[in-house]
Length: 224
Image 1 (spheres, rainbow, N blue to C red):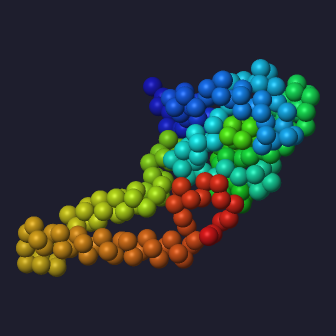
Image 2 (image 1 turned 60 degrees about the vertical axis):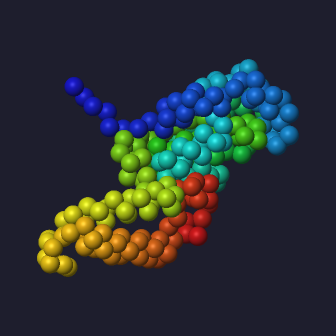
Image 3 (image 1 turned 120 degrees about the vertical axis):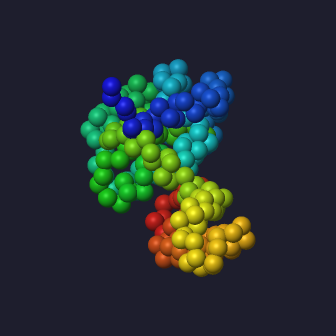
């Protein structure tokens, strides 16, 4: 029996869109018919694959959950594969238009180095909707969402540090800081360790310019 420990981000997006009903075809068609936001990407809705249309809020949630970026394709430092370029040309011919406003979803590393960590290429088709043109590279580890969860926002970080400090406190040998590990001593030591972990997290965050997932998902700056 083979267990798959990888995560396909396209499938995650599809599952989320179906769950939230954000892919309402009437709403998409209505928004695209107005097309006030984009004047260049004159896409014909009937010729699109509905399963590849995603709302910006669903894209944001996946980026926050998996610590990904969603930036203009001009910031991507890797090489766009030929099959993706062929799909763009095919879309342009089918819709008789010239496409622009492309976006890439991927980890921060793909916007700095040439790595194969599951980038996804989107094209903006209206103010709030994006069309998935192509996905390439490798799938993420299935544990990525768990590993990046502490950095989702301030609350998740504090909660993680709280439980880590609890574990460390439990491992402190009795008599090291007090004669006996009674209830009061336990929580005093726990508070001391928690403050130390928070201090380390603050120092690391400022020293390396790190920020929470919710703040970086569409930010083009490496440190801010």
